Image (cartoon, rainbow, N blue to C red; front, side, top):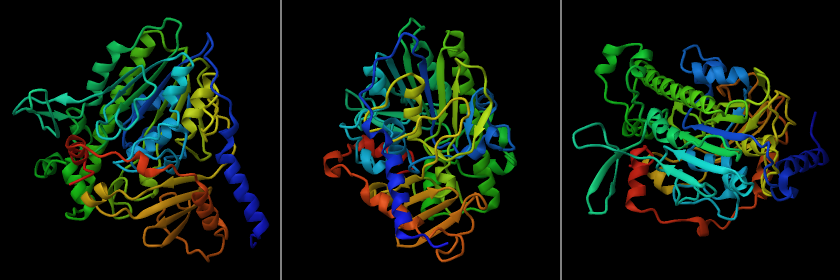
Length: 483
């Protein structure tokens, strides 16, 4: 049936209303005496479909699966972008990338938009953040706002030991080799700093880095998933430089090498899964279980040539956008439920605040999802990619501009004006693009997405641009975002 203008306009109005539902919220109220502790675990670059709870055949995630068995698994969780800075900014502000402004490596988070940590802090929470992503989630970019205690971890490397991936100047002018910490090292730094429960609620943000390239898992996780250890020994290390060259198309590999890279990626997932188990156990031993709300998410996925590409932050296909989202309220009886309704990262902060009995900040767009498995009110999802000369110059031009999903339909717009349509319930891997004129494609889908994009209020981007110093550029290069 052809959709008339009135119907399309009504649907668009409903879309905009749903996305802006929090606009009239009041200022956050103080936390009460019974307010729960809140633990937000972010695992960088973790694809949902590589976890057991999401149907993966390999045993990569026993601890995450155990957490999920007590709570709610959102099976169709998506990110509003396919790389870290805009995705985590959306996770912490419940705003779309165009709105919060952190859309490139040179743009910081708009200081006029309150973060989740600021809302918790203003409500009387102690706020603690520990982050292993030293390139994107930085104090200078605005991500430490609202945290009483914030640490961006970097591990010094002694000369001749390990594989340094970054260096920074020290007080005496020398260059100190550094690398990103493993999840086990994050825990060693974090666990002694977690306060014992004393009646004042805690908001804890933990950001692990392991699944991000390079794929260099330590023993025993490296050996656990390799299908051909002898072949692995003949291949170059799967460093960030190596993966960047794959993504840029400057080198190519066959199926055997592709499987090896997936094996190494799975080893990294197993390593971070063990750290998640250690963290949850440690919190329980200190008295947090039974009084805390836990959320485990990723910022984005990773490409392994499903659509001919590698890495992330270059396209908006499902392998880059689909992320895990596990929610567990340890104050309630175990649920073990799944929710198939589409949700995204901007729903996470509003949900955590609601479970803490707090109102969201006035600007927050997200819904308040239930920890008992109740299906949320449907709304469409938007994901974005913006121009980034530094990253695109080091890898390749970004293929996509925005993706709009109104379940089960998804439309992706390309830089070169091409448009792809997919029906996700029949084609979840987005293998078969449907022509716009084919039967069943909603006539207003593209126009609805384009109208939403055009109505987003974008901050003054030049005000948010910051000149990168040499060390920040080196950090981006170390993680494969620049050359």
